[in-house]
Amino acid sequence: MRILALQLKRIGDLVLTAAALRALREAWPEAHIALAVAPGCAALLGAFPAINSGMVLGRGRGFRPWQQVLTGPWDLCLDFTGTDRSALAVALSRAKRRVTFAWVKKRKLRAVAFNRFVESAVRERHTVDHYLDLVDGAIADDAHLPSVRRVAGRSTRVECSTRTPPELVLPEAARAEAARVVGGEKYAVIHAGTARAEKFWLPARWAEVIAHLRERHGLACVLTGGADDFERAHLAQIQAALGRPALDLAGQIDLLTFAAVLAQARLCVSADTGAVHLAAAFRTPQVALYGPTNPFHWRPRHDRALVLSAAQPDAPLTTFTPRMKGAPMERISTAAVIRATDALL
Image (cartoon, rainbow, N blue to C red):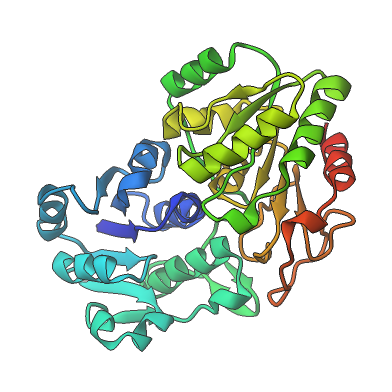
């Protein structure tokens, strides 16, 4: 059995696909599972224990990954992405079963690549569950795999719990490099940057949280983020508001080292971005701040995570609904974030 899985979206989506990949491995323990990812996620391929091999599909990667798709041969191909690029890869794979979500049928040309469509209401499902639905649909076609449990009133053959956070396994070299760059101190990660400026929290409030973590809990604070100019400017404003600058690793470390920095932190406080999902993969205690987006679909679900939403900013959320509206980030107060960090520490 040879299986090709395609997840060509960003880092967060890739991390949230880990449970689905684990479900594939549980269903077909002897299968060769290959995972195709986007170029920006290539460094994480070795962190997924459920897969046997990986490939990188994207601009500037040449013909070799497409040759890997063409020469499978594949018995099953699952597309978690739903883009033109991923549909082309599925078509070229010539897999016997080519599976994606039912919403892809709205794009008629794209849909030609597939012969199995799985119903999953993306607006009603956490992203982990949405991706598990695709695997469940693929497994349901195999008469040799018995049903093992029921979810939401329907039989399912996916054994891994939807409450289990995604799992990544990091090489020791990445953990050692993380320890080296941080310097051996007990530390908290402050990940203030995102790809969307409307998710930025106020720099002065980040500075207050950092000061509290230093003074109350004796933690060094490490700033992380991307190398984009607008993220760098945001971090510079935070540093300017601090009496004593924090260690700034934004844009200075590779993706695996960044994951290891998160894995070894005592705490992660972050805006709604890929850092939320990487921290959750290691069950790092975390406070995640959500403004314009609904945390229902993207929140961390382990027991050491607290979610603050600008829509209901007074305390961490305990109830999540698919239709929850967003709100400006400045509605989240410094006091609410500090209370959340104290509760976890």
